[in-house]
Amino acid sequence: MFTKTQFSLVTILVSISTVLVADNIAERSRNINSYFTFSLYCNVCRSLFEKHKLLFAVLLSARILQSKGAINMVRLTDLQKQINI
Image (cartoon, rainbow, N blue to C red; front, side):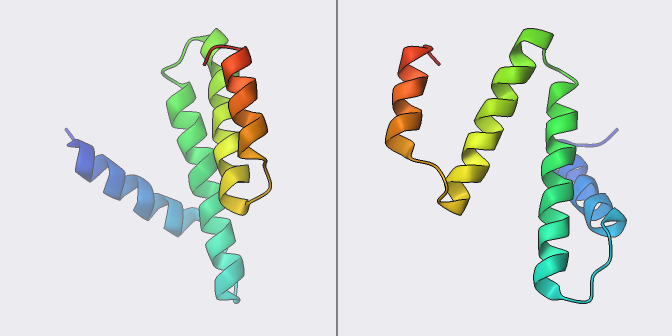
């Protein structure tokens, strides 16, 4: 049985080893990030009810856009208040 830390380490190592190999470090980094994000989404959604999966997808997408500076956080906060998240 894995502990939480061991599971996280195994997940990261599997992510790195199964990602498409790229010669460029920046491209390899994007590939790892994309794969890890997809793996996170799949593993979390496995434990969610159907009605919560869409909410999780929206929140995950918002955080990705926030990290890229591609979303207006004031508007996102207003949206969250309107739908009571």
